[in-house]
Structures are given as C-alpha cells and as structure tokens.
Image (cartoon, rainbow, N blue to C red; front, side, top):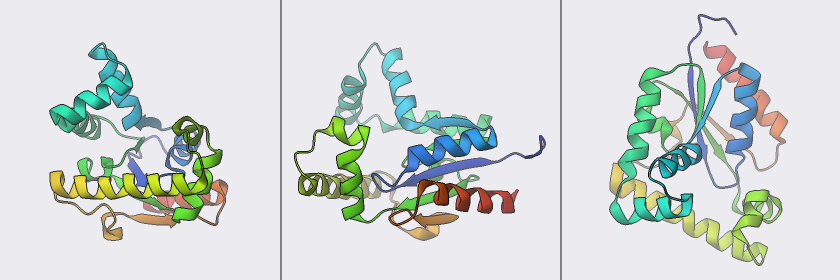
Length: 184
C-alpha cells in the first residue's frame, strides 16, 4: 500500500460471521488502525468509572447510543487508513468502504458453541444459541430501524457482501483484500 493512499474500511454483519477476526487480520495486513465499538464502549465505560456491563445497561436505560455514534463519527472525520468493526460504522462513516459478512444461522450457532465469546455467553445447547442469536438479531434490526430508520440487512448499503458460512477465514480475507486493493 502506498503512503499516499487513504482509505476507511467499515465491517459489520451477522453474529458469529467472523467480523472481528477478519477485521483484525485485515488491519495487520494493511498496517491499518483497528477500531471496534466494543473497544470504544470499554473506553467510555472507564471514563465513567463503570464496568462494561454497567455501561451497556446505563446506555440502554438512558438512550445514550449517541455517545458511541459521536465517537464513531469523530474517528471517521479525523482518521484515515483504519478498519472499524461495528454494527453501524458504515452508516456513520459514509465515505468508508463498507463490508458486510453474512452467516447462516445454523453455522452461527455452531460457531457460538465453540468460540471463546460464545463460551462466555454460556449457551446450554446449539438450539439455545440459535434462538438467542435469532432474538438478538431481531432486536438489532428493530432497534436500528426505530432509532436510525435504516435496514441493516439491505445488501445495497454495502460495497462488498460475503457469506462466510462455507468458506475459510483465509478465503474471506483474500476476497476482501482483493476488492479493497482494486478500489485504492
């Protein structure tokens, strides 16, 4: 990558689609800064003297999504050469290259049962994981429609859509890098 090339990449997608894993590898490969809403929320929680769970509860009950939204917008305006792993970064950073990763629900549930993050969710069965993933996604779709009037499942929102269900992480990364390099 040339030093004069400036690119903003946002990545989102379904639960257990591989967003964070892929985003971290892309950031390392391209020598880009990695941002994530999870990390932003942890930073804001520390600033408020709260745990991440307390902060999430605080945001939900006080309708304070705008704090994270404003930080995302600020990063989009002030920075270049980054990849941002977040549900709505594509929306708040409209000049970014927008990536959406899809995954079939049965594959997502299987990944949930074996991933570190999934283990922390303490699913008792693959069926329970599947139901909770479906419910969480339903709530996200509804919430983002209500708050922002956007449909996060509309593929036309994104520059690149990849179904990660039956491909390796390496194949996903290769597809993304090929596409990104073709636009810079």
